[in-house]
Image (cartoon, rainbow, N blue to C red; front, side, top):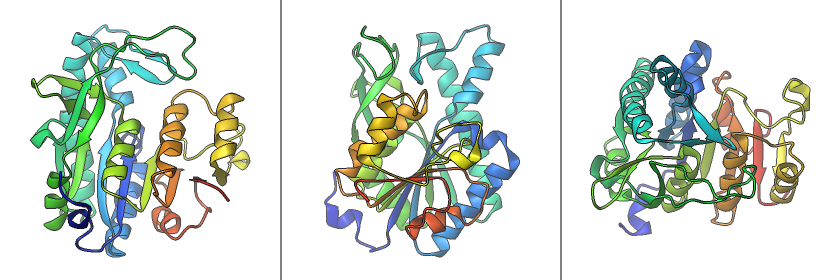
Length: 285
């Protein structure tokens, strides 16, 4: 791995952005995402994007007669599922996201975690997870991240490219795994010493009542966020996002947010420390 001085050699702040596949299913959200990222770049930010593709993958599984399986928002991946993961994430979703970015003038570069050993991983052993009950879960062809090849990312950024990464990982034997994009984006942000981490999701934040937009939590500290997980206010796929965000707060990342992309200036507002869009999570208030 390269030195920390090399990671930050151009002195531009780094925003790492995780995009849920649901964003690409909404034209306003996908266009807003590209506009938001374009705005950050114009404000002299470096940007790295990691994406999932859960809705697209579930739709493909259904078309193939495969029942999607999840535990507490985390996907179980069989060998058959992994074939579809590769096709959907590295093909459909990655290409669609790159094309949306290019249409807004963002010079996006599509790739995946196996490219250049960008995301190194190992097979996940059976584990217990928050919200998944007391028994250990075997997630199948799922990997846990062991390292990020930051050399690749720095090289791409230095040429003015915006990496758009599909969330796969690879081990030394060449085995490829489905990896949790929320977990992985945190590892990228940590190893790249990012100043800003944004989870972009159609839900657009954390709510006391998901059916009531006025119940949005604009600003949470770490203790409040943990309490809301324990009380099942934060549930399902939001649990791993928040848990991983909390782990990153101890590593010095200044701002973490969960937000949608419908408002084209939302990311710039968050970068300025404002809590007018989505939910900001901080170590303390």
